[in-house]
Image (cartoon, rainbow, N blue to C red):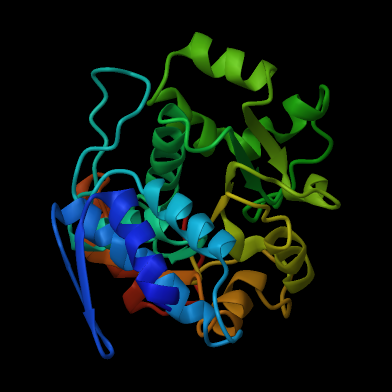
Length: 301
């Protein structure tokens, strides 16, 4: 892991301006906390890589350094978005863990009830990465499944038909940039909002990809979505496993993915709870009341 004559450690030291010393199986890193955190991420990634190969190449070391360099704000700090007066920051330990997971992992799965900020913080982190030029685009995805109502044939073109399903994602976007900025980004495909069905066959590089309401995906749809992840991209999947609008007997692809991926390197699963609800206090009381009656009752998201 250290490289010939500690070459890899010297590369990490130069990249993050930290002090590194190694003796036997112990590495000591000192310097500014943010730089130490990034250097440690590189060493952890190299250690993981060595489980599957005999050594690490210079290219792998440099790729790991590049990924760690892109880590944005430290946990608990305000996320920088396009509106100068917008204050977006995690509230509480659960949301802090969620933000840190999104910044440090290529794939984050977040489960939680209504009002815990799953979607809002996913959009905020993505917008912050876009503003810092750490990604080139944001892709917002949602399955087009009605919540217990049959809406019939909606009028208009594709965008008009899917707009009701993607409205929560768009509302979050408009909290973080002006209407004109959002419109311009969408016209230039810097921000893309699409239904899940239109993801097939794509590979998304240099992007933040958010799948919202993932509990309404089938297993096949979830596999299709997860395999769209490209190089230098982050994928965030959010949902509430206590509700599903899938037909009776259809297993949620989100629940299935959480179980399958829990031991996969690079995947972080965060579970938020009622204590993380940041909407009106009444929302927390409503969620708790319905929770006492059993998990089979569907919630509004």
